[in-house]
Image 1 (cartoon, rainbow, N blue to C red):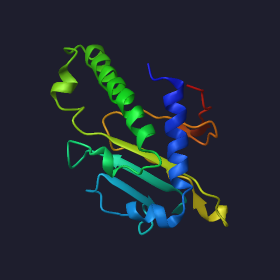
Image 2: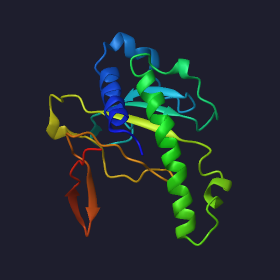
Image 3: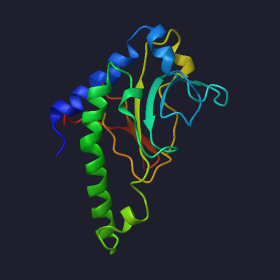
Image 4: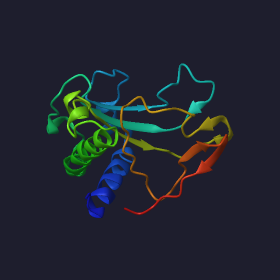
Length: 173
């Protein structure tokens, strides 16, 4: 139920944010996880043996339940707000379906506050001068109850299936 135009606009909005001048983006740069809007690069720079060569714009309600739209970057504010208006409803629907599938009442996971906090993360993979020394993203599991992934048409997402990494082909929409 999320219009293709909304999906395309949020992908483009995040890309436009990342392609802005560093002077504009630095207002949002932080490693402070309690900030609702964060921009950073190489998030695990001090822990990883190889650089995770990516920039990240993150928006979340993990520490504060309400999001003030004015704190979003102006260049992608409208696209993010439109996307959130649909994807948060999609998340609630998926949790209802999971609840029923588990033999529970449809509102069970929502009553457990599984919809209370959310994060939107927009990654950007800039050109790297030494790609053999970097990773786009290291092997990981998302630290959330439910992940809704919107992949651009460039691809690069892989999943581990039967001990082999398999490319996940982007599907428009």
